[in-house]
Each structure stands twice: as structure tokens, then as C-alpha cells.
Length: 476
Ligand code: NAP
Ligand code: MG
Image 1: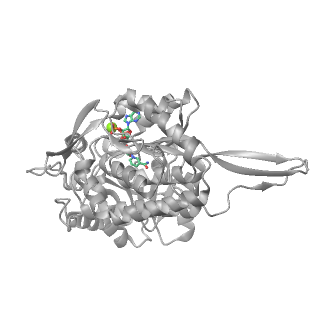
Image 2: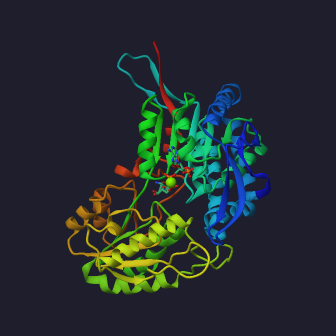
Image 3: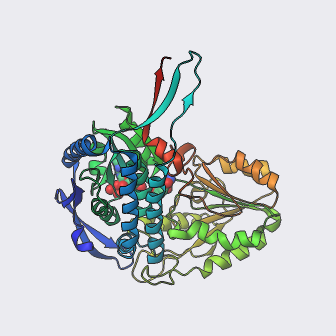
């Protein structure tokens, strides 16, 4: 599959814009394994025109049942090609092959969910004072841009593309420069499923180079973005000029809160994957661990033991739980956070040393003794680093949880139902998990408060986000 995926997928076929060539690096081997020609600013306009034309002609007025049929077929094709698709992103960004395969299957389920959602009632009938007949309908926006990061490249491409297409829009999908292949393959599979050419196009290229052209293109009615808070702020500013709609899923610094009355052994055993999974490159990573003081010591011992058991290794090895970081730059950034903590005299319980040998690896690292002003406590590290602090008072703990500008996810461990509900309400985050760490359900809305973004992916909320609400009144 690799060999054919060499440029953008425009108007139904792979075609080189050959603005520049980018070599893709396998982060486990530190070796170039593929190259793509990238699209630039000047390609964006013609691709957006093709999308708008295809949308008006072939998609806007297509019956929802027909759209659903095509999306169900796409879900099937994704599943049939799961092994190959998993290879593409695993090789580009280093996640274990088994996780990459899980992500592909989740992508297929996402298409199936939105295809199914098209057969449910949508809209309201509203009893208005004037007495006539008032009702709402949802209409597609037109052409939408979906910009995705490299950490869950296939899943997030599907989270955005599936509801956008289901709602009747044409999609310009821009994968991260480091991981374009799964998205490109998705574009080709969509054609194979029978979607008209131009309805799902994939622009391979650098965000810094062509991002502004994409966000400000006059045909683009909405930008659905997942990535860093910094780029999200820039996208929102650029989009404001034309009132282009935005939905932003940004960074996080999510808390894992463990009360003494909880099944804290289970919490300790699950805490490592809650923060270190995907080698910590997860916007929901529970990287700030708050433990009630009476169990702090015992919890920490068990957390460190479980973290040490995680198998770090080659993404291709079926036993591997954690692969390398995506790039040298990312690995160096993670190392700098840990070195900063070490210089400040913080206690490093496991990890904390870059291993010798090939690959951008960094081991799971747990730090204690941190102050709330420490960089490693406040900033998103986006790597396998967790900081643990003890608390004695619920209100004080919550104040510190909410002191973060981020607000994406949170885990709360307690057996006290009242406390679980009270704390869930008061935590400023878009997603809360009680006695577990599951943040993502295809059927439920996902997104953040505050600097973690605005708008929601997944669930029916995403379908609404990709449409305009229209009110129609019939005098009677
Ligand atoms: P990023 O640099 O913000 O990149 C995200 C995407 O935006 C990439 O496709 C990137 O393209 C593109 N981009 C870069 N500059 C752009 C511009 N000026 N205009 C338009 N698009 C532009 O983020 P990242 O470093 O890849 O990903 C890590 C971040 O994403 C973390 O902060 C993480 O928390 C966040 N994230 C959030 C969620 C969530 O759901 N909330 C999920 C995953 C990740 P290039 O690759 O070409 O630069
Ligand atoms: Mg970036």
C-alpha cells in the first residue's frame, strides 16, 4: 500500500503537487522509509474549488439513506484493509502495531455509527405563540476542512471525516505532516466505496506552509481542528475574518484523582496506561496524579511497580505496549522537562534516563516532590511523564485541579457516589471518568473546557457541529 501513497489525493486520484518532497522517518529505526510530495498554498484554492463543485453536484442533495449506504461500505472497506492501514501509521509515528490496528477498527466503527445516525429523526417541531407550524432542519455547511494531528492519526481523521460526510459536507482532510499515509489510504478507500470524486480530498503538506490558505479559503465554511493550543488559537484568529466556524480539540493536563475510600489498588494498576499509553502522546493523558495523603505512599509504590512492568519496545513486536516518541524533537522536549525537574531536586522514581540505542525512546517516568509552580506540573509534556502530589482537603485539591488553563479529561476514584457526582460537577473538564479512565466513546461527545478547546467531536454533537440549524415557519 505504501508505494502508491506518494502525494495528495485530489479529485479522485493521487496527484503530485510536488511543492516539496518530505521524507517520512520511522521513529523506531531512525530511518527514512518513504517520501511524499507535499501540496502548498497554491494547491489549496483549486482543491477547494473541486470540493465545492462536487458538493453542489453530487453530495448536497443526495438522500441521507444513500449517503449512509456509502459510509457503511467505507466502514467495511476499512475493516477489510485493517492490517495494512495499521502498518502505515505505526511506521510513521511509532505506535505499537496492535494499537494502530485497534485505532483503525475504531475508525470503521465511527463511520458505521454516523451512517446509522442518518436514519434517526433530526430537528424539532416548536409550538410558537403565533400558532402556525414551526420546525427546524439541519443543513450541511458545504466544504469543511478537517485538520488532524499525528498522535491518533487514523482515529481522529475518522472522528472528523465521518460526521462531516454524514451531515452532507465535502471534506478537505489535512493530516499531520509526520503521518499522512493512513489519511491518504482513507481517501482512496472512500472512492472505492463509491463516494464521488472531490467529496473527500486529502491534502498532504505542512500546516505552517498551507494552513492559513486552507483556513481562510472562501469555500471553506468550517474548520475542525485537533492539535496544539497554540496552533488552535492561530486557526481561530484566521477563521474569525470570514466567520468561518471552528471546532477545536486542543491540549490537556488531565488529573487522575484518587480518594482513600476507592479501590486504589485498581487505580494504581491502571494509572500507568492512563498516562503512558501511546507513549504519553495523548491529549487525555492523566499526567497530574492527585492522591489522598493517607494512601499516598502505598499508592505510589504500586503505581511505580506497575509502570516498570510496561513493555517498551519495537512497534512491530506484538508484546510491545509502548513504542518510541514520534520524533527526535518530541523526545528531546520530554527529556528537557525531566531534566528541569531533576535540577530542581524533584524525586524521579522510575524512568528519567534516555535509553541507549536506536529509536526516539523514552521510558515511563514518575516524579514526586513537585511544586504546583513547576513546569512539569503545569505544562502539557506530551510524553511518558507523570507527576504525583498528595492532598488532604477536597476543596483545596479541586482548586488546584481547576487552576490549570486546560480542561479536557479527568478521572475520579472513589466508592462514595455522592462524592463522585459532586467532584465530577466541579471539575472543569469536558469529560469525566469515574473509577476508570475511559474518555472516548464514539457515541458520546468528546471535547474540552477552557484552553482545551471548543465544540465537540463524536456523538450526535459532532453531527450537529457539521451543520447549520435552520428554522422554518408556515403560517396556518
Ligand atoms: P499541531 O502542531 O498543532 O498540529 C496539528 C495539526 O495542525 C497538524 O496537521 C499540523 O500540520 C497542523 N498545523 C500546524 N500549523 C498549522 C497552521 N498554521 N494552520 C493550520 N494547521 C496547522 O499539534 P501536534 O504537535 O501535531 O499535536 C500535538 C498536540 O495536539 C498536543 O497539544 C495535543 O494535546 C493536541 N491533541 C489534542 C487532541 C484533542 O482531542 N483534544 C487530540 C490529539 C492531540 P503539520 O503536521 O504539518 O505541522
Ligand atoms: Mg506542530
